[in-house]
Image (cartoon, rainbow, N blue to C red):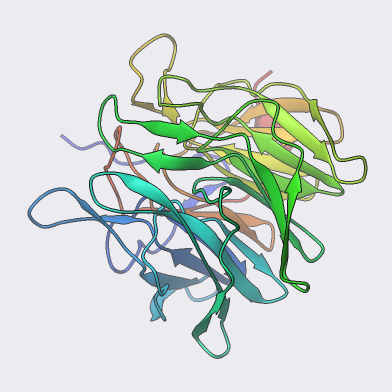
Length: 325
């Protein structure tokens, strides 16, 4: 018997991903449209394939369309939208073992065309990094260089932090994270880059930490921890609040591949968290992006490891009275 999703306060279902299930992708928003980039898809004969497919969700029409694919197939790509264009700064790809790629591209939505950029500098290539944008700079923190899917597979987590300036086409090393993290949430609010949750070398090692990089002093500090430690989360900022969704890892002392339904919001002004209405379809390995105050969360996995779905939900923050203490 299948249980229908329960759509609580702030949540609503949208048209599912047109091509079918997708996981370990990234998203970006330009002009009221949500772009779903890369990831993994299920093979008819079993297993998964890394894809370069890009699909576009029109938030006004609740419809999907195809766009030019990413020139190099990637899962866990590092993606950001700046100045009406979409940047992909490396990711992971491969067969039995996913390895970091430095391939980088910029996408022009008006021309529906990708242009190659110079690669991520040798030694700091990774996928699954926390991403933020400040001015003309794309910020990356943490990530992983190798991921071998399956129980006990190698997961090479890093503490690297860096930035890429889209105008000067220059990379810069930033002070390293206090601890290595991957499958982590990231957002810039004001002049601070936040890195939330994530894990360190495997699903069993999820973390509740919140690290904040002051972009003026370039110093990391630690903020109020997440109520629920989890990796594989999706995160997006609306105003001065960062919203975190779902995830994977240990839950209440149980197995390492539990899937989270938690929606938790971090108030960057008052350094405090609140719990909100849970995800109707708990999942991990997805991504989130805000469009006009509504957060869009397409795809993801509903079981440990590879378990893609075509679910496409939206969350619109509601009055804080819905939260629990």
